[in-house]
Amino acid sequence: MADFTERQVRILRWMRTYVAVHGEAPSLREIAAGVGLSSPSSVLYQLERLEELGAVRRRGAVRRRAWLAC
Image 1: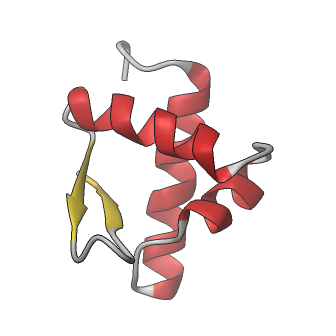
Image 2: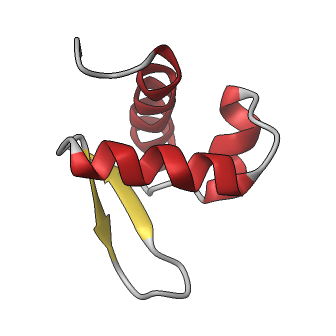
């Protein structure tokens, strides 16, 4: 994970743990609360950067889109 920022690594680890426990992808608000970010939009920004790096991918409908760690 050398190309990722510390915040991105924290998000990826948290997401993997969440999916392992709950069996589904977390919402942006759940991720924000879980990693201590102030808003879902800051999570979205990080997820879009992670998608560009190939670490996550989008799945599902636009209304409730799941972000899955690869």
